[in-house]
Image 1 (tube, rainbow, N blue to C red):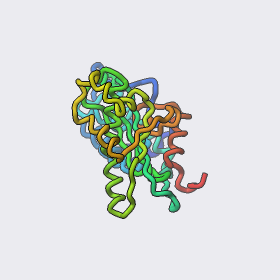
Image 2: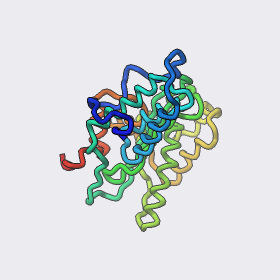
Image 3: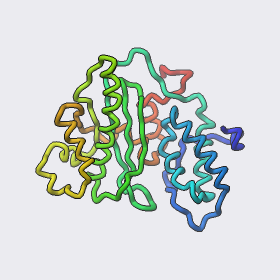
Image 4: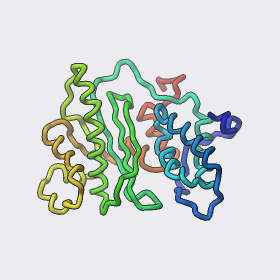
Length: 259
C-alpha cells in the first residue's frame, strides 16, 4: 500500500493523527482526485480489521469522500507515514489468557467540528486480548455528556452480547459481563428509574441497556478516565497517551511480544 501511493520512502511519525488540526469540510481548500482518495481510504479501511490503532482517524477521513480536499488527503497520508514506522506492529494473542469478557465504553462529547455530534468508542477484551472494537459518530446531537455516554454504553452492551453468546455456544457461560464506563451520571441512568423523567427524549431503543443490566447479562462499572482503553477510538491523542493505550490493548511489535 505504501508503494502504491508513493509513500514507501517517506519519513515515519509517531501518531496517525494530529491533535491540533481537526478536520472539517474545508470549503476553501483545493480539491483532490476523488478516485485516488477513495482508493486510499478503501485500503486503510480494510487494514483496520487488524490495526485498531488507525480506526478512529480512518473513520474520520472517510467522512469526506464525497468532496475531498487537500487537507483531507494530507491527513490520510499522515496515516501512511505512521504505518511506515510500525510495519511489524500487530495484535498479540497469548495462549494462556483467561476466558473472561470485559467491555469498555467511551465518548468524545460533541467532538465533530462540523455538526457537533459525539463520537462513541467501544472495545472488548477476552482476557487480555482485544477481540472487537468500534469508532462511530452518533446519529443525533445530544444535550449532555451523560446522555451521550448512556447511548454509547447501550451500543457497547449490544456488541458485548454477541461474543457472550458465541462463548455460550462453546459451553462458556458468562453473566454479569463488566461494562466499564467513566461517566457516573450515565451509570446512574441505568440504575435509577426515577431519573427517567429527565430522559424522556432519549429514544426507547437506548434503554435496553438497563434491561440487560437488570437481568444480569451485563454489569456496568465505573473506571477512571486514565484507564479507559476505549479512549483510543474516540479522539486524537498525544503521543504518550496513544502509546500507553496501544500497550494496554496488546497492539505491540510482533517480533518482541513479551516486552
